[in-house]
Image 1 (cartoon, rainbow, N blue to C red):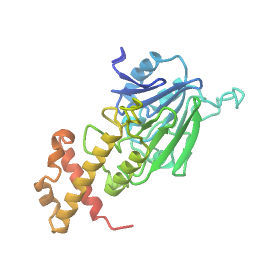
Image 2 (cartoon, helix red, strand yellow):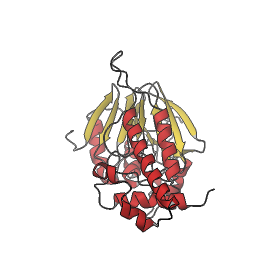
Image 3 (cartoon, helix red, strand yellow):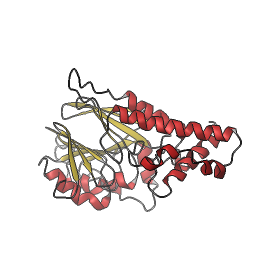
Image 4 (cartoon, rainbow, N blue to C red):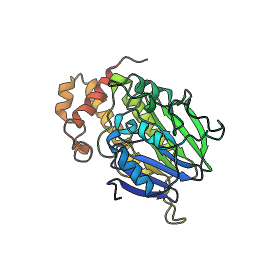
Length: 298
């Protein structure tokens, strides 16, 4: 726990996880500066900056958004303005004309920019990503490390992504994975149970299991949207939970049961004490599965 009130967890030699600022934040530090994945909530920006100061005096260069939720992007504007664009030298110092006045670049998939652009209340212009990509994969290089950003369509919303830090062997997600609760699948905004499962399978594919007995290797670390630092098996367990509850709901639907009847059977009962402690989260998860499976095939 840092003096700022943010929990700072060292994941690798130059990689940290910040917890307690809303959504979890991934922090890569190197000769180019700081790369953040997620920016946390707007109310926690001062604490995040204070926590970063305990790690390095280098400037924030990039903020990568992987989830459009306010607990992930609320800090975009202030954190970006506290940093400096990586393109300063290329522009000859003439950065005033840039959308954020020469602050750190904010990068996201186009879907995240689209969701943020139509948000009510509206985000300030400086909070919106000023670099967007339309492909399913975007690769950049920062701090002598390759970064790959993978768009995950129709997962917990229609705007999700993962960032793989190849040398650090760390993957940072949004709320596709949340170790504190059942996944929140926003069917009205493009989320789906099948897309959620596909995204978790992709996350598993990006990870390598630890091999402690031979190499004392901890394997790939996964920083979820909320909750604790995880390894591959924990992602597998989370995926298996989602699949099992999906299958139970699908079977009850085949029996002709209504949504209320399905809720009454408590199809997620084996996992409620672990993922359903928040009021209403279990019912919302079951209903999202039902609505998703009831939607006409595209």
